Amino acid sequence: MYICICNAIKESDLRRAACAGASAKDGDVEAVYAAMGKRPNCGQCLEDAQAIVDEEREMALMPAYAE
Picture 1 (spheres, rainbow, N blue to C red):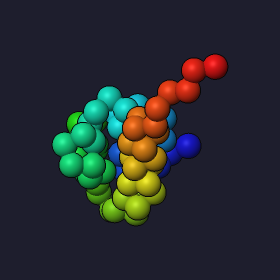
Picture 2 (spheres, rainbow, N blue to C red; picture 1 turned 180 degrees about the vertical axis):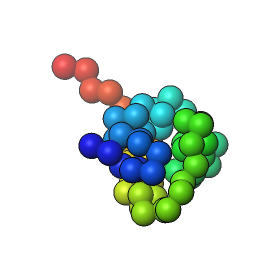
Picture 3 (cartoon, one colour; picture 1 turned 60 degrees about the vertical axis):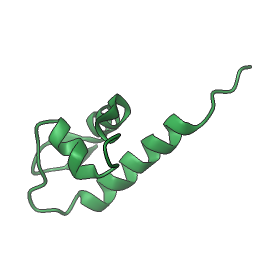
Picture 4 (cartoon, helix red, strand yellow; picture 1 turned 45 degrees about the vertical axis):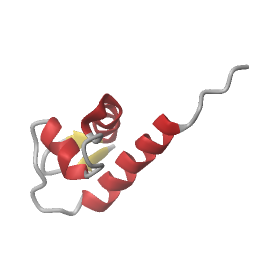
């Protein structure tokens, strides 16, 4: 699913960039966009994109459970 139509950023691309540490600097979705070589255009996507970045950060902090 596309999160940002203006930049053709798919949810999977955004998640991958967030996991790669693009958001480590300050957690701002605009920092993730910049790491992808993009920048927000119309801004309609920012709220949803930030939620995805936050979700990926939370998942990275969760301990892995051994089965």
